[in-house]
Length: 581
Image 1 (tube, helix red, strand yellow):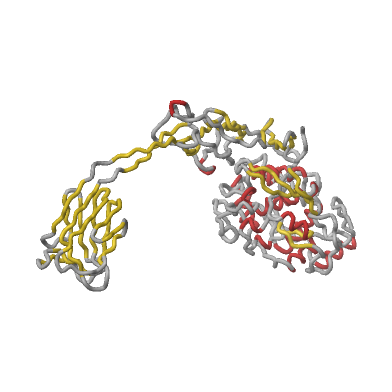
Image 2 (cartoon, rainbow, N blue to C red):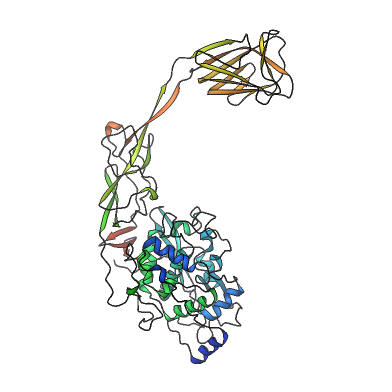
C-alpha cells in the first residue's frame, strides 16, 4: 500500500495505546542545555557533545526494532519508511517489519564499521526498505546531478568532487525528509566527532584517528574531513544546512526524537533547538550563542514544518564580509573562491601540472610571489589545508614549482695505508680513523709479534671512518685464521670491500678463532657526489627553459552573488537542486 508521509494523524486511541505501552516523550532534565549559553563554534559543538555523548546504548536489531515500534509507527500501524513509499505494518514490539532492515543513515563504514555506540544509535538508525538500503550503500547525502537509478523513494547518482577531481556516488531522499536526515547527520557529527579540545572520539573514531578517508569506495572520503570541528567537507556542509532550512522540524520528527530519547536518555539538540545548527555550520557561525533568541520545538509557539527555531524579535544575523581567494598558476588565474572572514580555507584546487614535464615539480602554494627564482624554498610554503592561514583579507596564493639541476662535486680519490705494529684501540691516519673493539667477543683485539698483526677474535669489530670511503683492502698476517668477516654495508669479498659510505663496521664471525689484521689500504673521497639543487619559481618563463602549461581545473562549481551553483553540462542548478538555467 502506498502512503503519503506528509501528514501524520495520531488518533486518541493510538495515543492512549502508546502511553499504555511506554512512557512516551521522556521529560527533559532541568537545565539540560544550560552549559552552552555564550559559547561559539568548536567550543559550542564540543560542549553539546559532552551533554549528549554518554547515553544508554540500545541493542542493535531487536532493540532497534522496539524503538522503531514507538518512534516510526503511524496512526494506522504502518512503519513510516523514509526510504520507500510502500509502507508495511508493524507486528509486535521488537519484531522486524517485513522487507525492511535497520539502516545506518550515517554509514557505519565511515568510522570503520566497529559495532560501537555509534553503530547502535537510534537517532541515525531508521527502518528501511531492504532494496533501497542496499542501493544507497555507504554513499554521502547530496544532490544528484547525474541520475543513475531510483530505488524506493531515493535517487541514486553521482556528483563531482572539486578538490579530488573525481565523480563520486551520492543518494538523495525525498524533499520532506531532507531536513530529517540533515539533523541526524548534525547529531552524529556532534555526538561522535571532535570534542571541544579538538580530539577525535576514542571509542568510535580511533581506528582512523577521525573519519575514514583512505578508501575511495567509502563515502566518508568525499563527505567528511578531519582537519577541524566542522567534520563535513564544505560541499556536504552546504547541502545539509540548506536542507535543514528547506525542511524544518516536523511533528513526525519531534515524535520520533521523543521516542528515541525515552530509550537512550539523551536528546538531538538540532531537533530541540533547530537554530543551533546555524551557530555551528550556518549564518551565525563565529557568534556567541544567545539562548534567548532560540525557540525550542517543544514550545507552544513553535509551528512544526514552518518554524526555524529563531524567536521573533531576536537580533538578526550580523553580515560577515567575504574575501576573495585567488589561486594563481604560472601567472594565470586558475580558480577564485569566496571565503567568509576569519574562516580557514577548506578546499584546494586540483594539483597543478609542472611548468615543464621533465625538470620541474609542484611544491605547494605561497602568498608571497617570487620574483624570477630563488635557491631557497619560500618561507611560507603551504602544502595541505591545515597549514593555510585564516583569511582576513583578499589574498592570492601562487603555485610554487622547483626547477631541478643535478651537479657533481667532490675531490680526486685519496688513499692511505695502515701497517699495524702494536696494540691499538683507535688510530687516525690522514683523514681515516680505524677502531678495534671487543664488542661481543670474549677477548679484546691484541697485537702479537707472531704474525706481526693485530689478532681480532670472534665477535670483535673493526670500524673504519672517513668521508666517502669507496674501497678497503685488508692485509692478513701469517698464520691467519679462517673466521668469516662481514661488513654492515657495501660488498665485501675477502680481502676487499667496495661501496660508498662514511663508516663501515666489520665483524669477525664464529664463536671461537681469530683473524690477523696486519694492515689495510683505504681509498676515500674518491667518488663524485651527485647533488641536486632547486630553483623555486612561481612564474615560468623562457629564461628558465620552461614551458607555459596551465592547471586543469574542472568547471563544475561557481560562486555567483555569494551563492554556490552547480554546473551540469550546459545547465546550472542551485544547492537545492533547482534548475536555474
